[in-house]
Image (cartoon, rainbow, N blue to C red; front, top):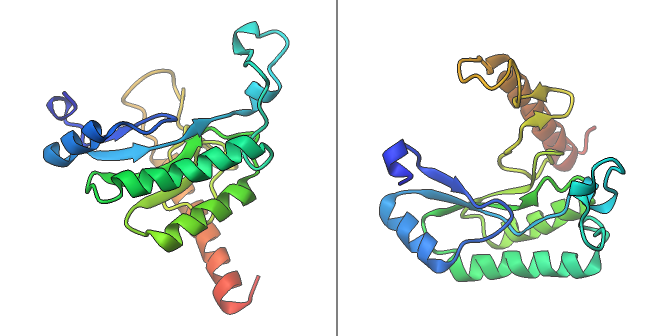
Length: 187
């Protein structure tokens, strides 16, 4: 079905698919982005006027939630161990919109994974924040750059080039500053 629409990539929002999905994707030439969890800011502190956003237990974000922290780190390693040799497994992201999480802590988890297994692209989170360790970004809004969601309504003919170019330049600048700091001892 994906191929019939001209798609070659599927994102599994906040979860990892079973072995059968990787096997099928390998055969069809589809790239997979697997994830582990979704804990956003509103799950911890939902708006009072939005009872539909009430989340049982009001979980703390990653880096502040020992049981979720352990699960996510263990799950990412299990995913790599189980599916890491599938050519379709090209992207691994901790999770979706992890807005109330400690991004510096999550960045350390991603660094460890990349050191052990650099065969895929890694990202700390979709949306909310882009970290220097991220190899890619999936988002609808980039802080200090702008959004791609809802511009000019739901039209498909809106040219996002300016927003995308600004995002690319910001990302390259972040990586250059990080490289200079780490490798050259400069700020």
